[in-house]
Image (cartoon, rainbow, N blue to C red):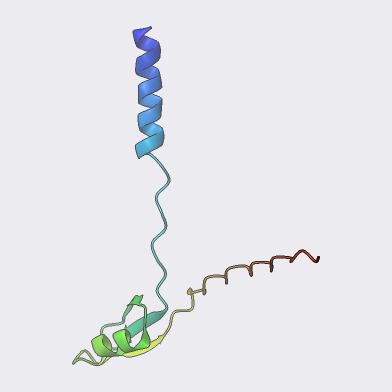
Amino acid sequence: MRIVLGVLGAALAVMAFGGSASAAPVYRYCASYEERGDITCAYDTFEQCLATARGGAGGMCSENPAWRPEPAAPARPKAKRKSG
């Protein structure tokens, strides 16, 4: 009985803590630095990117080609009114 409970506990622990790792976020904007040959895609807004890239670093900002907008939530159907 102890072995069964031990195996069951181990299985539950693996399922609870060994879940799939979530993917890293894909940000919308990238800063590229020609002098260094570096590209950093870590900005949600164009303004964030510009503040970092132009702040003495001499970089340029562009949209991340890997970024895809989230799909719009489906529209909820209108409730039907009872006639009567």
